[in-house]
Image (cartoon, rainbow, N blue to C red; front, side, top):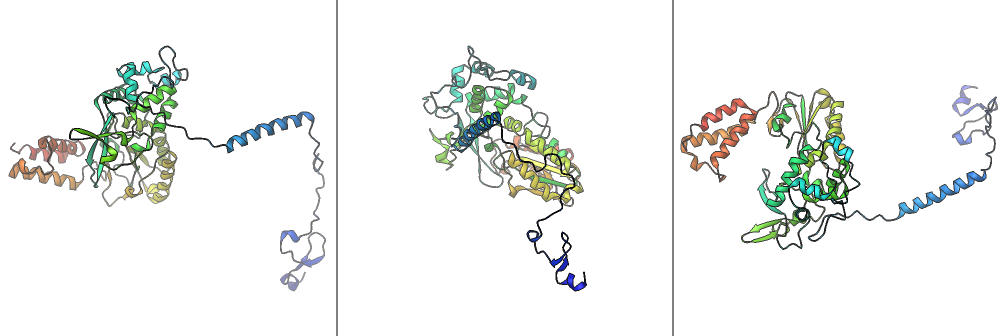
Length: 445
């Protein structure tokens, strides 16, 4: 074949040896192809018709498949919350002393070191109340004449502005929740990365892990406690091995709607929805202010903590969590892939039913102040210079002018407040704490 034949599309036909036009697409190529010298056994032979037994089995299969298709097309209504009204009873959901709940997995609970609660009588005995009192506390007391809610609202100022609404349980429910914390919640399995609301751990233990790292990444979970709804809490207790009635009772005792809480105005009680203009009529949630909420939230986050710990190890990093604050720290590998790493963290958090607050995400490299839950971790754990100087100025003015004119925030116990601030700084940075205590001892009360 000459050059011009090649240039203008003339070439040998690989199938027949003749010269013809070039094939612009595979469809225009000749359909005759070389056959295999020896075809495998059965290659190209017609498929035999199915036997009678095969036809019968195929018919049964198609029949069941059609039933499944119809079922998948049918509308499935949402599972209703099993929160209780004033006169409802939990007996239809769980067992009693005469008829224990047969769905409790006693082996799983014993292996986890959790108390066995085969019926509601056992739950009432564990928290130290009668069964009727337990049912009343686990119910939304709309029809009760004694009170209209088990919670009251306490508003505190946020450092960034606005109000944080805490749902504080009333004394009877708070006593039951404290018993649950002592005998059940403190025994729930929690990941080692969790440092918040645990005995022997605090902001200092969580921040000490990240001292002297090349990069520190902090992320925040949006609406942490409200993300754990009644359904999620009840499902978690079911996954541990508790029966349906016990799980529903535990979820009712530890979750609530903020709109159902009351606010005292003079001699009257008013619903929080009318006072603070909140309209959250969704599912009951873990209330901020209940003693059971932190421990339950830590336990439910155990799988997320495990996944985030594994992800951090892939990048040669460390991970800790204090409530809703996620902190990662590492070397060059984490610093170089910080954006990619945050994307993977966001995916894991979303699959766990939570959401990151992108406005509070920070990437702090060496050369600037690295703070983890208020603790500076660049070279060693210490308080920030700004917080130290502010408290030092207050103490200096108290020594010079007297403490009465320095309580500008109107603290009820100004002396106790100063001692608490000094103790916090001494715990994180002992050297600065000693200097502040020396000033405090010079104040004339």
